[in-house]
Amino acid sequence: MAASLNDIARIAGVSVKTVSGALHGGSARMAEATRERIVGIAAELGYVTNLAARSMRQGWMPLIGLVADDLITSPFATEIIRGLDSAARSADMAVFAMTLGGRRDVGAVLEEVRRFRPRAIAYAAMYHKTVTLPDAAKDVVGVMINCQETQGRVLSLVPDEEGAAHEITRYLIEADRRKLAFINLPGILAGELREKGFRRALVEAGLDEAAMPVLPAVRRAIYSDRAPSLVAHHVATMMQGPNPPDALLCGNDRVAMEVYAALHRLGRRIPDDVAVASFDNQVDIASRLDPPLTTMALPHRLMGRMAADILLSADPLPPEVRRLPFQMVERRSV
Image 1 (cartoon, rainbow, N blue to C red):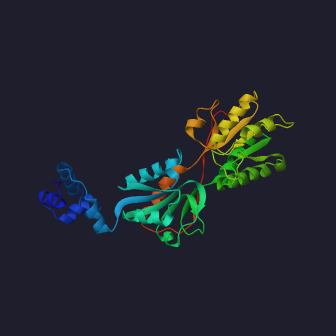
Image 2: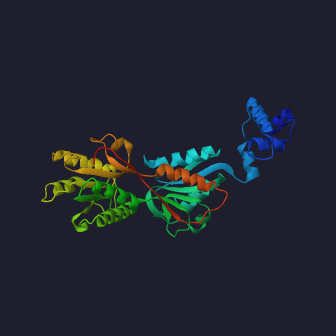
Image 3: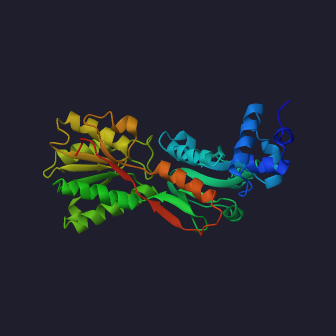
């Protein structure tokens, strides 16, 4: 038979309420020696917290529910879950996820998550975008991660796309690169904001913005890594033209990988002939390219940790959009 709170209380010579306080973070007035003795007895008996009973008392399970908007299919966006899980475990909580994709309705998935009576619920997306939640969901979702609610009704943690593009463009300019081009991700919010940061850095540096092209990485209106690529065509056209760029900024590391291949076919050296920089820091790509790629690492793990802190906070926080900085990972491509 599993040990119970009554068993521990009988051996320790204290009340069940005192045992519960020692094991579940209760009474702050308890003597530390008493707390340690109770914890020791519980360990000897192999006591395991009855989560169902605890849920009945508290009204919630020690869980954080996560609505994962295609998140689990992304190899680097899983850093969000790692950050969230690490911070949750530090608070003796666990994370469980339910995926949202295809024709699954947001409201229905949220109701499924609520059946488990989690302490709090987060909504996370695979890529930075805006999301329209049902009216009822704004009081259910505690934080949105890597996305923001269309009407701004939920606190959101998003990457500072514009700031990251501004920083990496300045870095290229400070490396004495004056003829830049940006092969960007069309039709998505990240690409739109990164273009703003790119252009702002050019203007601030006094460079001719009109002479610095921003080109789509794919033939479709909305970027997908499965869409027909235009990267090789753009690189060949620019590098064989009368005024080839001396730096290429890429919308993500997959685009950068294609740029490397196109430059190699043309006999151009990185970074001697042209510098290459990117976004995302997909380590399996960026660190294995030759030379390794300088790129801006998304703050996914930080977003996960911050989300846990927000969800477990005793005080509700007002809805706002918090933009978290990328981290530059300098390698040898600039």
